[in-house]
Length: 203
Image 1 (cartoon, rainbow, N blue to C red):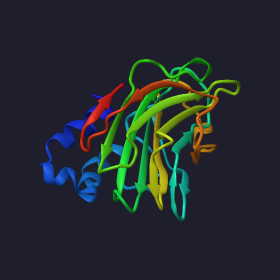
Image 2 (image 1 turned 60 degrees about the horizontal axis):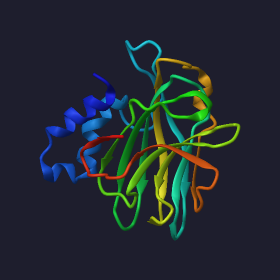
Image 3 (image 1 turned 180 degrees about the horizontal axis):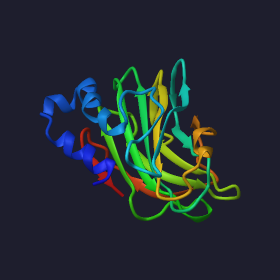
Image 4 (image 1 turned 120 degrees about the vertical axis):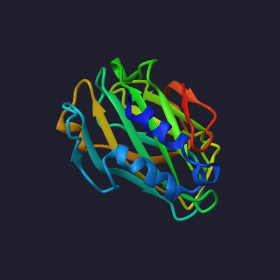
């Protein structure tokens, strides 16, 4: 089973009330992600898989509309990646979004393997995998759309697990998280347009 399917199975065992409690949900999924946030580890017994920590962040001292854009540091083909994003928002409360995908040529995400899990409630109504249309074809994860309002957001790209292909130390740095108000020049590859707490959605 994949990390994503293991998380879904663990969450399925929680009561509906527990699924609405971010602390309970985080305690449930943390063992599948290598422990508490802040750890940088190699996953024991899983050659070729690496986990890093606190890759990038964004915050704004006011309410602001826009898409939260996470830029990956590498443009490579065939890398399976799972990214965990933790968010503070004064309106919706704390929440976690876990996204997985497979990178492709020239920044285009693979059609297979895209999924997202929301833990808590989020202003974001879509999770999308995208890329910069022109060279250098940067891979993006988008939480949005641009019409979404974030209330004093603190966003941390906490963990990433990469595997299968192109697993190098170059994944450890170069992540960028920011808010954008225009998606001009970005090509959308995969979209999940409905997010419900405690469930995984495949796009």
